[in-house]
Amino acid sequence: MKGLILSGGKGSRLYPLTYTNAKQLVPVANKPVLFRVIEAIRAAGIDDIGIVVGVDDNARQVREAVSNGQRWGVRITFIEQDAPLGLAHAVKISQDFLGNDRFVMFLGDNVIQGGISPLIREFANRAWNSQVVLTPVPEPQHFGVAELDQNERIARLIEKPRNPRSNLALVGIYMFDHHVFEAVQAIQPSWRGELEITDAIQWLIDHGYDVHPYIHRGWWIDTGKPIDMLEANSRVLDEIEHAVGGYIDRDSQIVGKVTIEPGAEIINSVIRGPAIIGENTRIINSYIGPFTSIFHHCVIEDSEIEHSIVLEHSRIVGIPSRIEDSLIGRFVEVTRSPIKPRAIKMTLGDHSRVGIL
Image 1 (cartoon, rainbow, N blue to C red):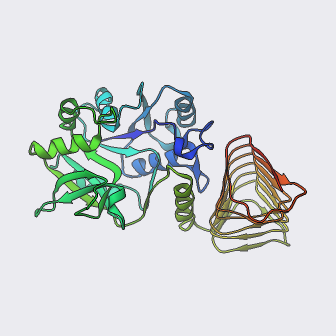
Image 2 (cartoon, rainbow, N blue to C red; image 1 turned 90 degrees about the vertical axis):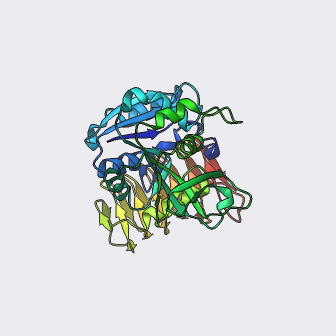
Image 3 (cartoon, one colour; image 1 turned 180 degrees about the horizontal axis):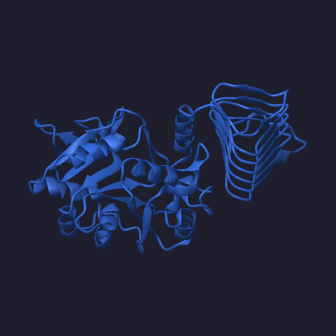
């Protein structure tokens, strides 16, 4: 069995953070989302993985970050998609890599609780042609929705139905055998000009192939927007283990589940978990509140921050009000300005400079 990760797209919903950084490489709990996807596939016993990338600078970043996959014990093959022509198009251009093998397709910006090992085991032990991961959602009208028949097979897929007859939303993880290539060759582009994977799955259903659901009961998050990225960060942090690999002075307090990575220094500060402090980051005279990830080589001094993500090589110094619900990019500098603020909520791209009023 093989893995196929879709890692194209510009991540425009995460602008300005993704102007200079591939969206799949933005970290959740100090680990890029794409790395978490690779780890989930490897944990399921798959070591031959194709990654569909574009032809822009984001693709270059992904290639450099992932390399040949040796760090995870997998073999990586990059597959270029010249234009964003749909998920089914990504499958179509990956046929040479996939051959006749069954495979799992995983969107590279999704985070799912518990991994995909149970899904892989179930599909491997069945003669099904496809299996689609679904999860119950409270507002299915905002999602692609699957309707099941009396035999608990998928009967129909509907994109954002006005009056949904099911609350089972598509998660963005799919299992296929080689018959999917018949489907992607047969379907036509949608009104968006894309080959839709939902159309390909519906083609399989309409032509008598076995398409079954896998109902995921844990949480799942598409990290396409800042609010979703923060939610994913909170969910993952809530499951971390307490671990201290850096230095904590006697005047500091560590409360709850906190990971202090090697080389980090905590000086006269309070860290209230769940939280993670990255390598060679310094926290001085500051408060780091719950659900906060501070990445590597940062400085937080005389400031308070919670429920936020701070990327590498950023400095937050002398901020008189608490920063919360914020996404702060790489090489950002946030310092105090003389005029008083009331509240601070930010999404900052790389190399930003902000003077707080």
